[in-house]
Image 1 (cartoon, helix red, strand yellow):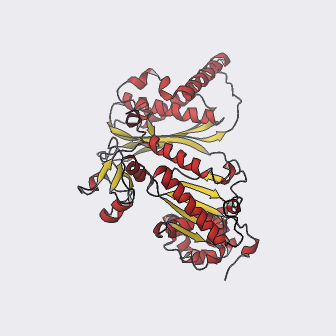
Image 2: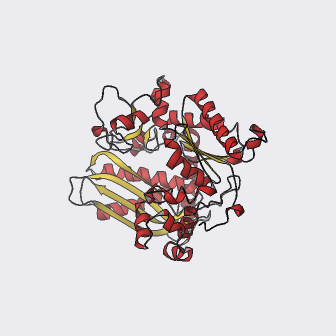
Image 3: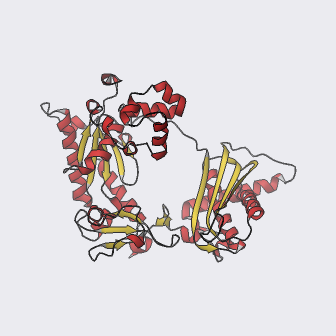
Length: 442
């Protein structure tokens, strides 16, 4: 029996749309191949892992060869019918923009949420009857026809196949997409409030439910909750006591409740920290090379916090050692006077590194700034000239503005030209992978 009166819940017409095996489909289309009838994988470069990873596999490659998106390159079968191609992230972004421009022909901007590079959410509540004014047609049929119309439009313009989850709210649309539509012959599925007990409560394992990972599953099990139905019928006060506001969210989600309205502005959220990490292309053993990378990363994250208008009062450095070392690495942080100065942040991070580094081979570096304060004020001190502080601030701002306009490599420090430096090599990456600029130029 339902725990909510669904007649009092927002009833929207939501389409959650996913581009099927997006990266792989883009590469198939670029080669004039059928995305669903071609075996193709997109492999990341082996630059820093020793063996590249599968970023995307076409549906046929998954079905025939059992390839997943976590398969390592050296584990990919040597099938003569399998195409292996490098990533072109900028190309995928261009395709994503093209697809979302098509979506904008069906909904207003405020009713479109680009959820990820291959998923978008459309609230077609306002336009459903505009495109399908037939009063004799049921709401369910109008939704299905709307989804099919968009599928065919995108397929005609781009060659990409779409899967669509239809729901009374964004959550139900997402569950319909993840659980059912990807396995439907039409790649379309619809979940409504009336389907909660029959469909939502029957999702298993629990980790198949959006927002529930293996750790949360174990925490639920410790409370004696082993199914989505158990969570839906648990005492919400008990869930809140155990998990805070997240517990109430899971309770509502397990009951199919999501009161999100896409057109309503989301509350502004301020980040608690900013950071960056990278795996190096080889083992670094020279301190000067490691310090060069730390300086570059310190500068990059400093630019991010300046862009957000905040200063940091805590810097954290993670150094991961090579697999050949006995220890895994070290991780330390120090509290500092609030600052966004690149020069000062570099000094603090190098202090941590020099204090704890003892000559090990390094393969992984991470930099994080936390304890953020959102302010434009500058704290002066007795040990530095105010004029010097202002000059450093102005220099950081000028460098930031040049890079914003012309790209990161428009102005770099001399040490970024030295051996072991990574910032220039990584400037062409998108999401950590090859942007494909060379291919695009051809």
